[in-house]
Image (cartoon, rainbow, N blue to C red):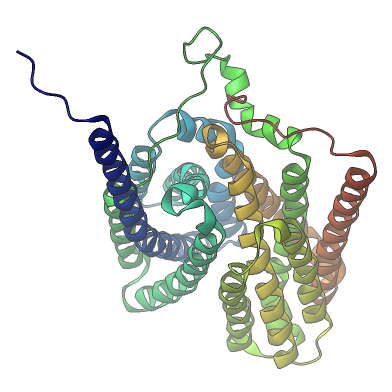
Length: 440
């Protein structure tokens, strides 16, 4: 004899109660995950900042050549651009948390190996390993934001996460300077390994919302596009979503110009403004402090204003750099840099939040990988060009040119966006953006 069945109303009530309990559990997980994610972002950024200073010190002490310092920076940044399609595919096709944990653990192992490494060649090879790991971690940490926070909290979450990033980038180099002074780059790299190991352990403990369901073909089986199509999916999406693609391109151009200024900063502070190493430190600190404030301010943006906020931040970043280049005394340059950093932080939150809102979940890793690739490609290109322009324009001239270039890029984006909005009002939208599940 079969057991009596509960009345339909009772079953419905139990089902509703179970769903409500599951929803409360998901909200609790997210409430716990976001603070941990913010801490991990700060720890990982501190490790990155510490590593760059320690590596630059190591190669300069080994070779006494400025080109070796540039080679270290390129060893770390070039793989982020070159491996963007592969890294994005790994993030979208494998469990993203597992991929991030492995990348952070490998970074810790590389840092330990660098403690024992001798010679410029070994250092550069291992630094390239940092770049390979960063090619995964940079877009991966951006792609998981919607799984860390509720959809309505993505902008706020990006704000806190980017503020944590810049706090980490500020603390890391300061810690590196202290450790190198006390015991050389070996101790700094050992601490760097501990930071990356802590990041890996934290990522392993992070509880994310469930993975998105893979796209399904008409016959009911998971879609199997070609490898080439999968690798190009991030680029394909950005071509189809014109606003997102335009924003990534414009921001990439601005970043290239802004990083031309990085090459000139130390010469400008010490030789032009006659403020010595302390002046250079204040200039850099002004920018990073502005970045922290700007990222927190960006969290107050509404979703419909994200593109406008990002473009305005791009223009104002260029304005800050230009005014710094025109400054007659140190305090004017520091104030202009703080304003430029604030605008840059605001732009960063707006851009990342817009991409996070728009990109389909199943291709988000590849879209963020393209975004990271464009940014770091711009960084590498800007620094490479600046090394030559510095001898032609001088430090002040290079700062002004890099600022004007950022302004021009932002204004070009404003013109394109305004024209698209006007066309949409008069003729209707170009068509719906790609639906989730149509891009693999």
